[in-house]
Figure 1 (cartoon, rainbow, N blue to C red):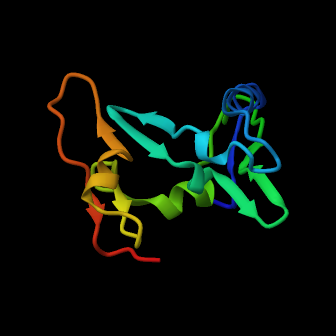
Figure 2: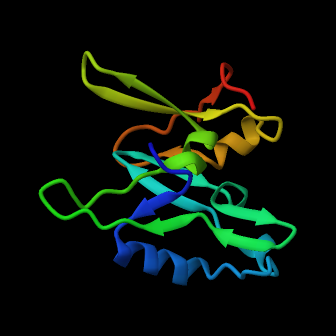
Length: 135
């Protein structure tokens, strides 16, 4: 993706930053929400551990503004926070893209259920946990 952060249009980044209201001193880290991104009929959720950079010196929201003008933009780049949490499978023959929750030591079927969901007219299916990816 070319970036270690989530990146998107300034207006969206400003709204998300304001809504999340992450404190630089990490004082509200345990109260931060999941961030859900809807792609088609799938919602992919990032937990605070995914979208916040937490260190001994504090916390920072791993989100930056990237304004790409039309006709190429606007764009949103999911970056490393997304790629660490989800396995992305590309099928160039259709073309199609699929997602699965990457398997990490902190990810079991129950926690995967909160990270990926299907919405809309289709029946809900069980979230996938990738068995091939590990950290």
